[in-house]
Figure (cartoon, rainbow, N blue to C red):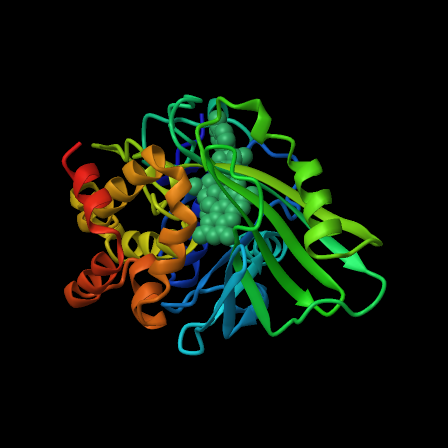
Length: 355
Ligand SMILES: Cc1cc2nc3c(=O)[nH]c(=O)nc-3n(C[C@H](O)[C@H](O)[C@H](O)COP(=O)(O)OP(=O)(O)OC[C@H]3O[C@@H](n4cnc5c(N)ncnc54)[C@H](O)[C@@H]3O)c2cc1C
């Protein structure tokens, strides 16, 4: 059985980000790496977006970035600037291609389909296989997106829509999210924050069709791509054993209140690369505990008062844009945290803090 110094289980976003980070920093010149990934081929399957609050290795995979965005409640729209930290979108197809092409040039990196093909007893393991308890009774961010192409100029490509609450809520939290890549092309997503036990919420295609026809008023379009997903909004195990650590979503890199994960994965990869020579004794990289605490209170409010959430999200963005973006990207100072907390309805949050 073949032996390796490092083994990455799961060649998705976290596994490949880590392998790339190790490779470009020459950490695999004298070490061997096995990447275990069952998928047959790599194609675009996700569209990763985030406010660019830190530098990352994938600027050349960014298909669009925006300096302005909006949020809608029925009859109210807020316009927000993010010129200091533009919102970027990465095409996962370009990301996979760039990384695989680079890794294939390193003779110390080998790809396998199953852990049964190598010796798992030796070597250090970075595991990104989801460990989530897939209970339908926990909170999830679940969604479907359609990339549509219109036959005439339709979208304002300079501004994206983060949340449009002009839609049925059905005792959950529901919004649409639109990323206009050009005047004729956009990704439109229906997003729910809810448990997964209500089949009534899962007819995503009908919701999208209705929104595109009636809210966006687009009658003729073609679909060029679609994606679907469910991101757990509850704590992952984030296990560390003597010879194994969890990475990516499985390693707790998802921000619970928002589902944002991509940049946290990049920071985790950098942390591992900086400590790779002494990885057995290195502490795991974690999202600051204060966010887990605040997000749990936020999610309690969300579970108990879904009807209040559109207004709460709208109010959140009454704080300075930089403050909200720092907060949502885990980079806020204590003063910024306070200014976010003061925007929240005090009594509801206090009651849910005590639960
Ligand atoms: C559709 C979608 C859109 C998203 N959009 C955003 C976004 O806009 N911004 C953001 O910050 N986050 C987003 N996320 C959340 C997060 O960034 C992604 O889920 C990201 O892919 C997580 O990376 P990961 O490596 O942990 O998991 P994955 O990328 O899912 O990688 C896990 C890998 O493990 C492999 N695998 C599974 N089982 C096994 C096994 N038994 N053995 C070996 N390998 C196995 C899988 O094939 C997969 O390649 C999105 C998630 C989804 C699903």
